[in-house]
Length: 116
Image (tube, rainbow, N blue to C red; front, side):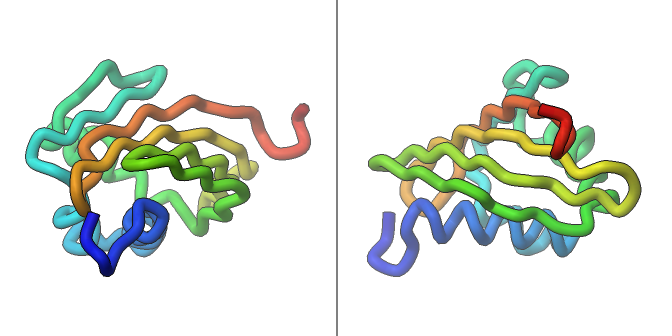
């Protein structure tokens, strides 16, 4: 991690890029060997992530980061996602970084806000 970027700063930049639909801003944040795992995706690579997952950015109005816990080069984030249509919901994501690059994200889907 450089003296200029903390794990939390890199992660916040990632969410800001996703919310803005700015692929040019997120690409330099992800390592070349980046992997993404969710209940729908099993350890997909960077190319598959941009093909399959990135188009979802079009349907996001905003993220509200509720908790961000960082330790070393890893972090957990609990956020509320506000879609352009439909109900808001919470997810948790686990990040691993190598230097200033995100090399792994694991997403755990949550419930609609107010459902629990």
